[in-house]
Picture (spheres, rainbow, N blue to C red):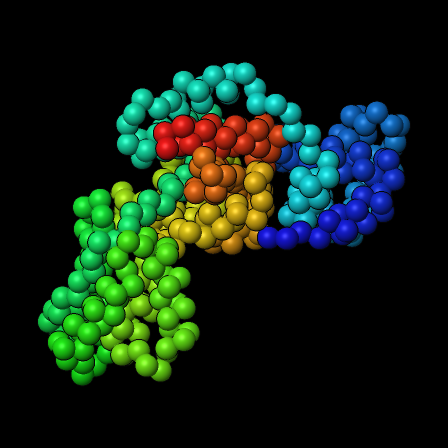
Length: 358
């Protein structure tokens, strides 16, 4: 998601030193306690001398700018989603990963020649334990060249797509044939796919098929068209093979008062995680840049839980190609300054291990 940094600069330029310090203190207090902060409390904390009445006026100005809000008439202020975004983009201080966090991740995320999925499981568990949040890890795509494609007619208009790869894996996918098609048409469709599939990975085959469809859409048999549009063109590997989403630490979210107050939304979140098949979208969140990215509230398009934040970073293989991502999801008041270097370090560690393995 591209962000308007000029708007960030305009907001900062509109604040004098006192206003900026009040804003910073409100956000930091919220991230620390989750509670609104009042003008009297701030008047005792600010290095600049200001009365509670003066601070109330400043907080009112910040509220009119859309950066703060008041949950109740007599309560203190909390940062809005826009306010959190401004703080993260412009005022957040991020240091190095803490030595104890680094040691905990190093101790958990080692590689002794096991299957790569074991490494990623451990990375997910380590992130959840260290951050006390729900961790997410997108496993890398594993694509072997295709040896053969078979189409098997079933009862009614259903058919089975069978893909055999060069390394001996066999994967199946059901699809629905256009009404009234004959077994002969199914055989022709299989011949068409086999004529361009052998030796190509699924990703390569998808691109070739899309090109073929563009050039010969009218000529393609309806079964072949149905096959490539609903089968190969949106291919996803089964759980445990290739792309998959690993989630750990769901219970950690329920320890947070803010998330507990939105328990129905928490349930929606994990229903989304369990049901979502198009998990590539998770990786797309990180592909716009190499560094750690933060998605606050409604910016987080992957989940329906609007009160959450997602901190995510891609990891790369030896060719510097993004192959997966690691992240943590939690309440909006995450300790971003601590969690960002943890996510960054874990992503780099996983990338180095995968690169060394390959």
